[in-house]
Length: 116
Image 1 (cartoon, rainbow, N blue to C red):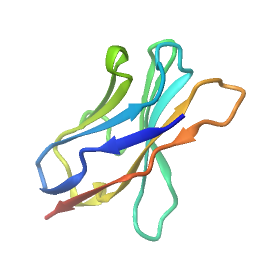
Image 2 (cartoon, helix red, strand yellow):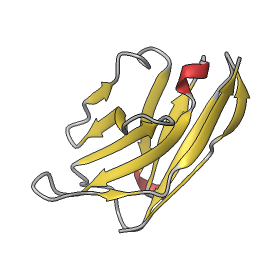
Image 3 (spheres, rainbow, N blue to C red):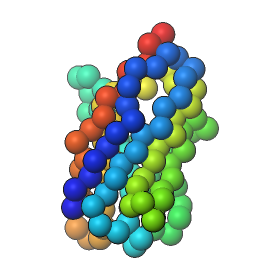
């Protein structure tokens, strides 16, 4: 499985970005589609997850600002990020877990920088 993330960039605080992650192969029955982020000097943390049952998870720090979604026809998962803050600056990674009993696959990361 290969994942290609894109959509990062430099944006001013209050702005928006939409990240995309194109997955090789169908995402129709994928167990979970997730976005993580890693800020400089910090651990990689879960930002949002879309589970196979349609439920979503958002880290408290992004609730109400970020939205995860998918387009099954395009094998793509998105992360719409609104009202961006400087503390959202990080490398964002997509993660796809096809089977809940097996490790998933990581994308290569896309840099998001939010200026104050």
